[in-house]
Length: 431
Ligand code: URA
Image 1 (cartoon, protein in one colour):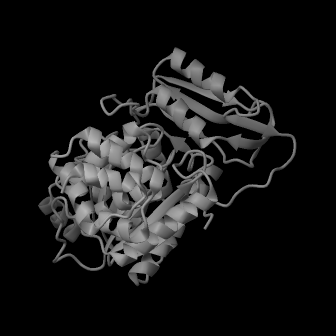
Image 2 (cartoon, rainbow, N blue to C red):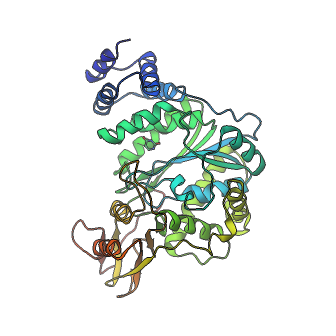
Image 3 (tube, rainbow, N blue to C red):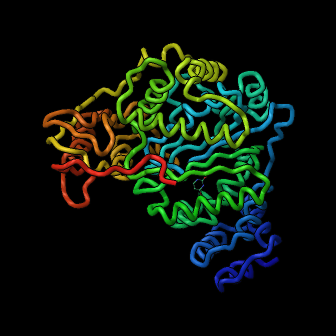
C-alpha cells in the first residue's frame, strides 16, 4: 500500500480500513514510514477525525505492533488504571497498594512526565534504589507474590504508540480524542489488562479543558475499550486546580505516604486527594466484582503494608521515607493577603513546578526531584492575612523568587485569585 494514498484518504476526510490502520501502526513501530509522512497523517487525522470503528481498529493495530504481556497464572481479574494526566496526580502511588490490599492483582506500566504533566516513574525515582525496569517475567513473579508490580514503559509493548506519541508531542496533535483513545487503550491491551479504570482529567491542567470534551473522551474510551473486550470504568475529575497537597516528585511521594499512613493528620488538600483515591478504589472493586473495603484497608494500615512490600520488592527502603527526607535547599512560605482562595490554576502551578525543575520541557531535560509546591488547602478555603497558602521548595533563591512572584501577582488571568466572599467549589469527581 502506498503511504501517500493513506495520507490522501484522511486529508480528504475518508474513513480508513483496518488494513490501512495496520499499515500506519506497523510503519510507525518499524520506522519504515518516515516521520514527515506520519506527521502529515497525524495532522490529517487530527483535523478530520476518525469514527468509532477506525478508532477501535487503530487501537487494535497499535496493541499488536509489539509484544503482549501474558498474565496467565496470576489471580484474576487483572486490573490496570490510567489517568489522562494532570498536575500533582500521584493517585497511582496510593491506589495500587490499596487495591492490592483489597485482594486485587494490579500490573501496571507507567510513563514519565513531559511538560506540566507529571509522570509516575519520575515520582518513584525520587526513592533511592527503586527499580522501574522490571522485565515481564519479574512483573509476573512480583504480582503473584505481593499483588502488585509497576514498571516504566518498555519499547517492546505498543511501540507504535511510542513513535506516534513522540511525533504528536512536537506536531500539535496530542489533544485529539481518537488518537488519545488509541494511545491509552493500545498500551492497556498490550499490558494484559482485563479491567481498566480510567481517570479522565478535565480543566486547565489537562488536555481536555471543557466538561463536554472530557465526557466525549470518557465515552470514546468506554466504547472502544468495551469493543476490545476490556471491562472499562471511567470518571471525569477536576483538574482546574492541582490534585492534593503537593506538586513535584519527592513531595508527591511524601504526600502519598502521608495518605497511606493511618493516623496522619491530613490537610484539607490531602483529604480531597484521599477522597478521589477512595472513589477510584470503590469503582475498581465494583468493576472487578470483588468485595473489599478500601476505607478499612487504608485505616488499618493494610494498604501501607502493601506499599512497603512494593517498595522493598522493587529495591527501595520504605522505613526511611518520611524521616530521611530529601528536602530542597530553599523553602519559602507564601502568605495569603486574606480571603477565600478563588483560583489556584493547575496549568500555572504546573508551569511553576516546571520552572523550579520538577518537570522536563524536552525528553532530555533532567529533573530535580526535591523541588515543587506544597499546597496547604484547596480552592474555596478561607485564609487569614499572612497565613501560608503555598510553600515553595526550590533549588536556589532565584528560582524561589520567580515562583513567589507568580503566586503573589493578582489579575484577571493570574495563577491565583482571592475573593472577599465564600465561593462555590467544584466537586472532585465531575462525572
Ligand atoms: N496519555 C496517553 O497515554 N496518551 C495520550 O495520547 C494522552 C495521554
